[in-house]
Length: 332
Ligand SMILES: *Cc1c(COP(=O)(O)O)cnc(C)c1O
Image (cartoon, rainbow, N blue to C red; front, side, top):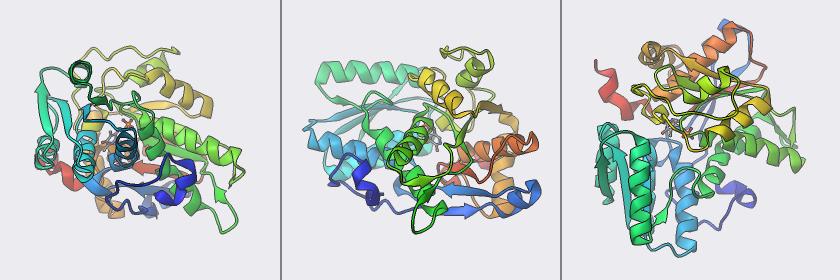
């Protein structure tokens, strides 16, 4: 990831070996729909998810700027990744989570020696608790979009993709990007990465269409998109999804995600919650890729979009984490 140092706040001091992750052709999917499609598999990053990209850059900057300690709310995986990188950096960290956050994430935060505070309610309540702690203790508040660095880290997935799709002389932009949307950092980072390589003259191809996928049980940005709004309102029903990273009922910068997705010419779409676990199995059995439910939901979204002939090739589907982290959901 540090190959793209010029486009990142650096220099790298804290690292857990962020390898370049594979961009795999989706063999059966491409055959079924007659389109060139690839899957970016971020399941093998430290902590098993793409949250490592944001944590690697975020932690670096926190150390560089002299933060005494860190506090952050998390739906699960971000807390795990930041706890690991904070341990590496030797910086104390407090992670706030909803009690309903996956047990695996609670375990990894504790294993990394972070302080874990569980709150009643949702990630929004965890966010309020993190803010309160930051104000009371002076800890650096690393909540989504509150600090600008994790979006920089998450850009690197897209820089790797553009690079792989290209040749020795230039990067190549995909026609369509299909990605999961929780807080929306991945979506904003994809748009920013594409803009930067275009501005630098590093890439050929038009800016990609960006398709953002949510579960129909927690789809605040999809709802705003479908109602033609520019503002995202909180999801008022119980945000019940196995794709825990998508359990963000009130995304703080939902409006920005809407704007980026619309400006790209793509769109937001919700997939049926009841089909997500099946999609984990379908992706594993058809392509050999054991994705997290967020990634499988995204793959499912790509299937729906392909059926509507909405995708421009080459298509890149983003799997944000490893299925093995979610064994608890697949066992029933
Ligand atoms: C956080 C997370 C998401 C959502 O990403 P955002 O950048 O918050 O939209 C998707 N998948 C996994 C595995 C996650 O941990």
